[in-house]
Image (cartoon, rainbow, N blue to C red; front, top):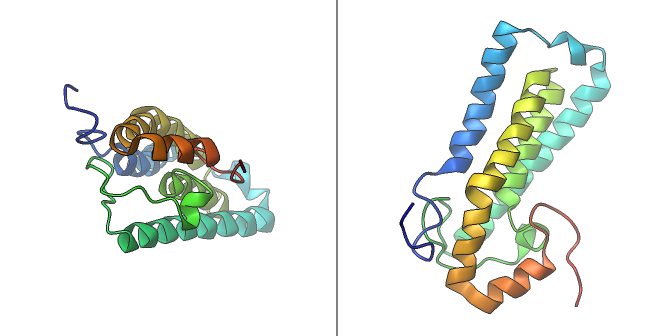
Length: 165
């Protein structure tokens, strides 16, 4: 990883790889050690909660993609950012797509009564934080300097209410 962090955050697009990997790992784990019955007892509650979580996650994903498209900036996690987007869902989370992906997977795990996906989704979220988000933040700091510093002080990395000055 000798590339200049200002040129691009990563060489590998970790977030989509880890998200798909979480689903595939859950499939393998369920095939080897079936655990679906663990959530079956939660019944309708798990299905409704999971559906709401999954829809919320999908909403974050789509809203963030639309914001980025409108700003005419790159959406690929291994390419340089053209603009710093701070409005819309980016005012609630510095990483609304990664938050959305995580909520989507957790919601699907509950709705489909698939406990292994709960585990692998959380592992994927921690891995995205380590392999992508931290490098992306260094990339954004190098490209946008004090503007990114102010934004990162005001808006939480994952989710929360913006901090007022």
